[in-house]
Length: 227
Image (cartoon, rainbow, N blue to C red; front, side, top):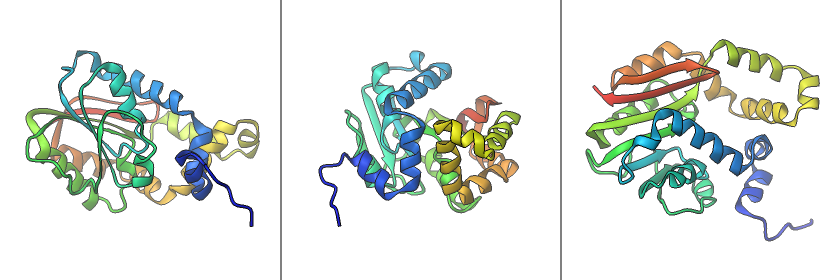
């Protein structure tokens, strides 16, 4: 058996996990950082206080945190269930290995909580989602904000799904094939999320009222305050 030594955490994870391998093909870390930065600008991040106490939940390998660092925020933390993913992060934020349903933060201790594509991985709806929203509400200050972006079954996303089903498209485009592979490997929770949109919104609105909300280009974009 040939041993592969001295692999980066990203490469090692990709060899072990088909989803990680597909993700590595889908976009580079720099591409993801730029994507997150562009998204944060649209949310108004340029106007947020630079000393705001910010936590990115489901932060994974930390590219969202790196985008926030580029804006100049000084009190950043990340939280994710996977120590393997968190080990890939190289930055200044303090990171926590934790369950989003039991956050390791004091009551009303954070100004902003950010989620960029993590809630649709939750196993049980609505229970896990309700517990997560309740924890978010607990740790946010009275005037704090929840910022989230999740996949949403808009006409554009339906079109993307159709393209992913075309074998020729997957052969021609490595990016299409990578996306299709990721969808296949997270199919249970992904389909559960997209198939229960009314339940998802009702659970969210029970804890947070929207300040800014948009459903477009396959995404649900939301900024909310605790009810």
